[in-house]
Image (cartoon, rainbow, N blue to C red; front, side, top):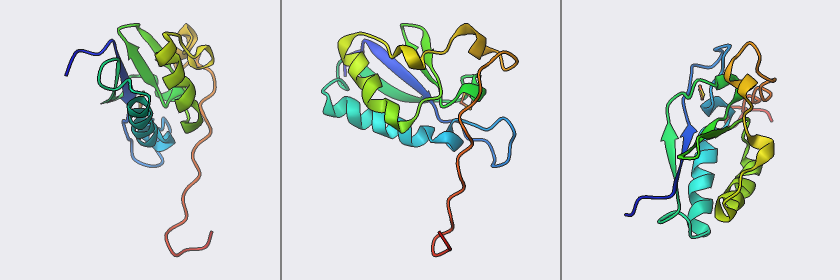
Length: 129
Ligand code: FES
């Protein structure tokens, strides 16, 4: 496989439920990573242009799910499944999704913007909806 032009490092770190800091996996990062891989493949970018990799904690947990885009050196934050098509489209076009870019204040928990809402607990199988 050739070296890709870009690598997406999708934080899939998971902390135990109830941890105040939360984690990207708790906010859907595992599913986002899988969707990015599928979308990059479907778009024909996966083998030559962009590889979506998993990552451990990128230390911007409050702004997760977080993705580091290298070698460009920017981060996406508060990424949701709905953002995947826009991310892939921007990669195809050599642009960035400006609304998802983490500003410098988001790299410090004290000055960061608000996190995504905590995910709702899924009902147990066979349980009440
Ligand atoms: S858990 Fe994802 S940045 Fe820390």
